[in-house]
Image: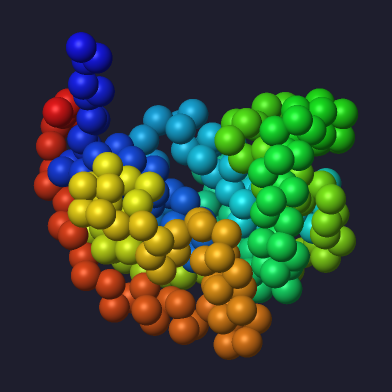
Length: 226
């Protein structure tokens, strides 16, 4: 019989919820969300998740901007990192989503080559989790050229985990039968976010985010396994 996988819990939530908080915080530009996650996750985990977000969300407008964002991640400069406008606010989301089938297929076979032949020789980024090769491939094919686009960061105090963070990518979300929520990274949700942001800016999504029920953390002195 296969041994049941141990689930790591930190301050009352599975590690997957804290990882989801990283992804959603970068997407919406929530500095304190990133800060709070960084207190509970390892530096290497934070860097891996945020580096994936360079291609899934930030979509840098040049190799130089990619390098700037990567070094902000390494240095924990989350305010500066969150100031970068994502593809949602730069009219790339439809093109990003239109490439889904091609990117999922071609990213598997070509992502590594893009990294070692294009990204690594020209930036400080030398390795990328292969799970994000589809987004890397999309960024490489589109090659944005609008370096320097910014947005206002979300300056909101952390009071707990917003409900939309607990989506189908988390242990708790799966237990609740959840799938795609407000800030989830499904392709069609990226498209939806992009349409809203291009029409009305980030404010409508931020207002919905602020209305989310908050799940209070339960401070513990050690990581629990269940």
